[in-house]
Amino acid sequence: MQIKNKRTISKAALLIVLIFFANPNIRMVDILPDFVACFIAASILEYHSIRAPFFESARKSFMTLGAVSLIRIPVSIFITTIRSGNVDDYDIIILFSFVFCVIEGMLFYFAVRDLFAGLFYLGQRSEAASLISPFSISKAKKRLYTPEKLKGLTVFAFVIKMCGNSLPEMLLLTKTVDTGAHVQVVNTYALYPYALVLAFILVSWVSVTCIRRFYLYSKEIISEGKFFDAADSMIESNMQSTLNARVKFQCIKRIALLLIISPIFSFTVRLDNVSQINLMPYFMVGVLMIASYGMIVKIYKKSKATLILGIAFSLLSIINAFIEGHFLDTYGYSSLVSNQAAKSAYLPVIFSSILSFIFFVAFIIVFRGFLGSFIGSLNASSSLSISDTGGAVRLMNLWLISAVLHGTARVADTVFRYYPDITVVAVGDQLSNVVTGLIPWFGTVLFCTSLAYLGASYLLFSSVKERASLLLE
Image 1 (cartoon, rainbow, N blue to C red):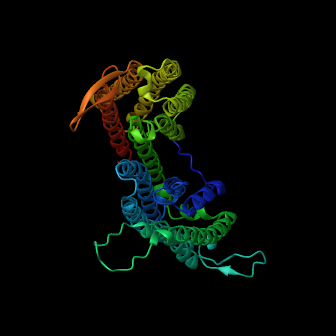
Image 2 (image 1 turned 180 degrees about the vertical axis):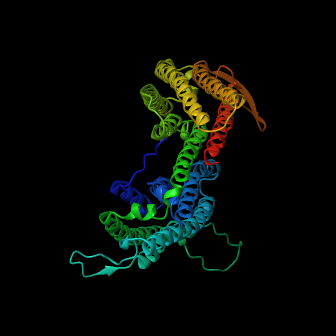
Image 3 (image 1 turned 120 degrees about the vertical axis):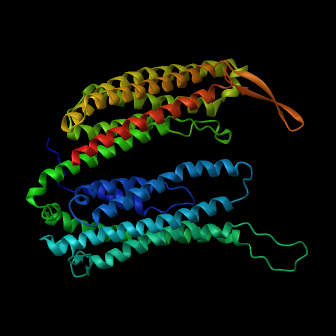
């Protein structure tokens, strides 16, 4: 089976990587998240990572950096929860910002080091002279810049970005002074806005300079058109079949990873200080499954029904999230106890949830059939026995059942909230009323179904990855 290889670098994808990496962070908030740039960069390097040295290490560093950047999201939620008890204490934000800056700075350095090592390696051993040649950074083409200097500038720009993210926050550290002590206390809080503006200007200036020069360097490489040929020249002709197997295996590994990660977004995270709006984007379950489908069709046949149902489920999940978010922002679950207008406004939440569930079930059933056919093609390409195939069928059925059970529990939780129950709880020496759904403990059931869905996904797609490894034997 032939693998379709992309033989060009998308300038749009390259610009996205550069812009997302360059934008300044504010505390733990990253408006253009780095993990998007990391995963796109890793995708760009995929072709070369299995053909030439150093690129695989660079790709792994970008993937790790992307994972760390992605962790910022749940950590930000964690910080919000902690600060809900003490909104005047910024120390927890400063601590996590500094830790993330140090980790991300180290990973980015390793990624850039290995990336340029790979580029220089190819440039010295192939006809792709643009990889190691100076390039023009002026319209008159009189000012030249070397790739070695660009490497240093890239690392410097990211360090400046990390310093601009963390150092101004140090001015907000909590300070204590002993009672009666005669010391002059400098109000560093007053300096914070100026430091923040200065850091933003400095980071933006250095980042724009780096973006421009890196893009000009990449443009020279793309214009020369020998970047991919240089990677191909590293492979001997008798290794072509082995190379195709490695390419297919790498593709299947990414498919399995996406499908293992997708159920994570089925969990529900609700915080009182954000109106109990679910902070986990449920539609990402469908988005990641669609992305995995897109990877499968590169090495297998297409299924229009799978794609259409997946898109429909994702769109309906987004609509349901907006409707529920609007309801919670306007009324809240507690208003369902006695407010008739709130009960009427909650009905669209129920209807959209049921509709989303119907399409989810249809999508998961069709996807299971498509997945079974794909896994069957892997079995035909390897030396698996009938008992091995039967084990895969059982795991796929377990995955399907756990997904449907979770979807059912999710709809049931939405419906149960329409019939609120008031529970009296003791808070210290006082009694307080807590509004829960019709079944107060049903949240635990919902969590368990999400956990089962995640566990079944891990078992199934870990097995798929193991089966794919037999292609290399």
